[in-house]
Image 1 (tube, rainbow, N blue to C red):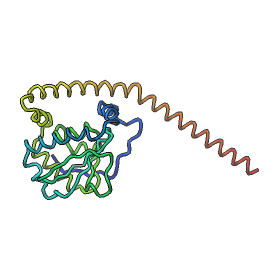
Image 2 (cartoon, rainbow, N blue to C red):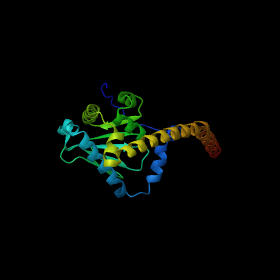
Image 3 (cartoon, one colour):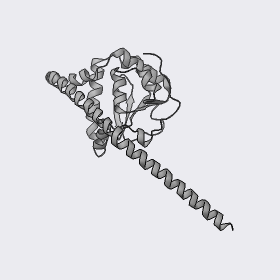
Image 4 (spheres, rainbow, N blue to C red):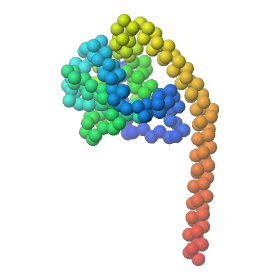
Amino acid sequence: MGPLNEAAGPATVGSNNRPFTPSLLLGLALRPVPLALIQPALDALVAAVRRRHPDLLERVSAYADSGICIDPTDLPFVLLLTLDPARPRLTARRALEPGEASATIRGSLDALIALTDGKVDGDALFFTRKLIIEGDTEIVVALRNAIDGADIDLTEDLAATCGPLAGPVRSLIRVAAGVIGRLGQDMEAVRATVIAPALARAEMQSARIAAVERDVARLRRTGSGR
């Protein structure tokens, strides 16, 4: 992949542009779930990636003391990635304290997974602002290059954690991915034909009300000045 493009600043997403996706529904479902129940799955994922790609963290060992905040915008938590090769860690947090992360990668869960899996051009994701980076871009470039070189396949890595059940789990993940993909298409169709027009009409109505309120306020000022 080509060089990473740094975004000029945080993304501004309007109500009409917010993705209506399965990931958004997942985020709503996970909102009441304690992070302690999510953490074991993250630990298993890190262990699988470390076992199957032992050289990945060695490539970013210069940043062992640094943390990267991964912010899936459609989930109700952020992830703190620690790059220490001896003790890598991916921790779910509601929020981070200032200074905990040297850089932030922000985007939808779908975009983050696609970048990790190498399914899309990373430059395209950053150029179109589907992914935003903030902070130390050098560490993000190093991590991205390491991921590219490791040739990560999340389906295989997740299946590898299941031992003799790896085959059935692999098939289940692929079937689930297909179902989610079709669900995403259906949800986008609903958003485009129903939700987005309704939101547009609501915003137009709000704009008209605001204009009327400004006119009334101006008339009141004019009347009081007589």
